[in-house]
Image (cartoon, rainbow over the protein chains, first blue to last red):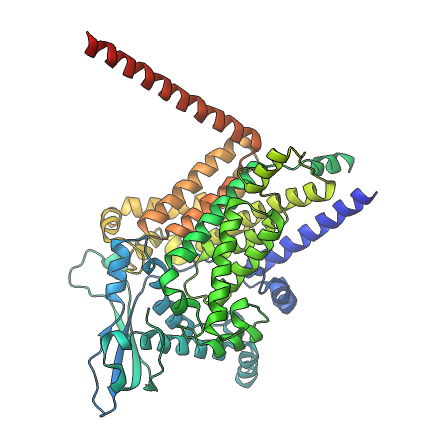
Amino acid sequence: MGKKLFALFLITAFCFHFIMTAIYVLPLNPVKAKGGILINSYMQPLFEQNWQLFAPDPLSNDFYIYLQVENKDGSHSDWFDLSTTLYKENQKNRISPNNRMVRLGPSSFLQTLRVDETVEKLKEKVPEDKLKSIEKKRGNEEFQQYGIDILYRYASSYVVKLFNEEDVERVRVRVLVEEAIPFSKKRDPNVESKKTYTTFDWEKYVKVLTP
Amino acid sequence: MNQFIQLLSKPYITIGASLTRIGFGLLLLYFYGIHYAQRGYLWGPNGVIDFELFQSTMIDYNSFSLYGLSASPLFFEIIFHLGLIFAFLYTIGFKGRFTSIVNFILVFSIHERNHLILDGGDNVMRIILFYLIFAQTTRFFSVDSYRRQITDREVKTSFVSSSLHNLAILAAVMQLCIMYLNSALYKVMGEVWQNGTAVYYTLQVEEYSLPFFRNIINSSDLIIALVTYGTVIVQISFPFLLFNKRTKYFSLILVVGMHIGIGIVMGLFTFSITMIVIDLLLISNKDYIKAFSFIRSKIKNIKFSKKRSSKDEGTVSEG
């Protein structure tokens, strides 16, 4: 009897867990929309997961992070490319810390652009002021801000290596996004990839450990 | 119901569980070890992610990390090195259940401290590490099993322990199925996966792809389309091919092949090895024993023929 009860309990827990997991990972659907908060509070943070690996649209952009500093005398340095060497080194040797560290720059920049799936879906259905309050409740803006902070710290960690640290007053970051050449034009030598620059504001330099 | 109870009473796939434990352990040791010199930069209080901001997001997301408990660099060093030590103990299978719980908490903590450098492999490993807390992972190739041998104690498996083990393994397999099926579903929704060019786009990214393979694969539209559709088909068919023993091995060959490809061409090799290590949970003890004895006999043959050939050489030189 005890065995049966225990087995029954295990099976129930197992089924409950995987029903929750299945709904959690699926695209937004009516069940998920209704039970979203409940499901999220069960799944996060312990079972947090995301399997949109290279899908629906695989990431095909290159991200290059640039750093510029302002010295105490007001002069500005050139823009320093922090990414190209890292990428090249990762291509040369995979068994190195670079294989993961190469993700720091692009990941923090992507975090600054993160879109909230639920807010995105509600965009056309809900009036703007209500949308704003929902957005605020979901904390997406704070999450983006967190990404900007990491991006600055990431760039600042190179100051000691590249500049005379004592002179540095402020730093700013620029991100170049280079889109892949569309498949249909891959053999056209005149087509260049589309480039977009995002330049962030000047911020006071904060010391961060060097990588 | 009685049949079902009987099925639960005997632990299955204990060899696979032990092998996966070792595989995860080695991957974790690599994770801690390769970044040893950058540990302060990646996870420390003065590193790339601001400590106070990190603490406040832990509160916002109701999450937890041992690394968030104190901003002292010494405290950080202690937690990091505990992580390293417990990853080692987990690998060698010392004090099975206790070590697997502590190791899970430490892995979860370091993952939460810096999410930017993680990938899907870390994500699925973390979840399966949790399931494996309930499994018997030190039955084979472990300090625990060695100690049992010398003290000549019988392995005691209560009904609770063996049923928990079986469901933990089943949970890991379920997780794998959900992962592949879900990933395939999102791919089918994407335009470039539909028109068979997705692989071209993923290969354009400098962050991971190698120019050498990029040029080979890009030279042929046929390869691009085949690899694109092939990936979706391999992923979508995975759960359904598991039901039959023969198709299971066919599917294992396909997914392992896919992961080796991703590992080499895109350089996401820890992700690939993680997935292959999880696949070790799909093979039954009977098949492992068959495979081991096959390998053993092969090795014996080689040794034997070597001995013979060295003898032959001896006689020739004498003559």
